Image 1 (cartoon, rainbow, N blue to C red):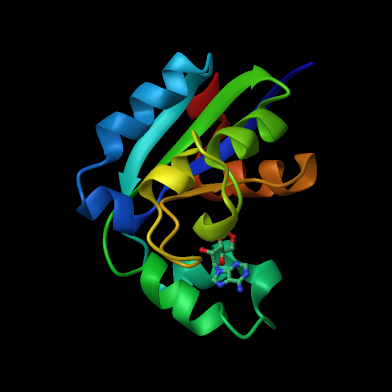
Image 2: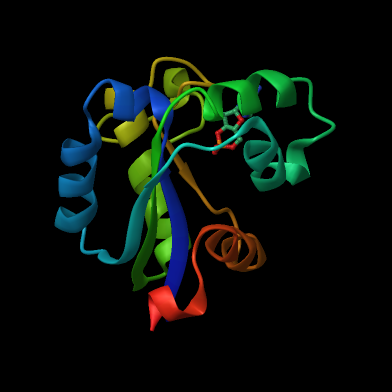
Length: 138
Ligand code: CMP
């Protein structure tokens, strides 16, 4: 089933000029990039994006980090895109990420973990809609 997911190249990776290398890996894995742009989120915009994590202890630090510099947001399309992108990223905590995954290679910590991906179809719909209008995806 062809599916779409939202990917973010987070501020830690953009600052370290890893955007090109990550995009190369995305395309080599067989994803089509359906939309892409660079964003510098405000704290409030980061809070809105991570609303489901509001009660978590790391929410303040996470939203501070996500608004600390520019990020790149992308809509990726592939068969089973949600699972496929999560597999390419690896575990949230780079200490647990498998060899060959983006987070194993590029993440610095559980928070500064280089990339984000939607975790379910409903989340993907919310997250894609947070950054892109339907006309961007036609
Ligand atoms: P992400 O996949 O974007 O989803 C939530 C983010 O919260 C996660 O990646 C990490 O950047 C961050 N985070 C910080 N601490 C934790 C934690 N203990 N567990 C999960 N996510 C965390």
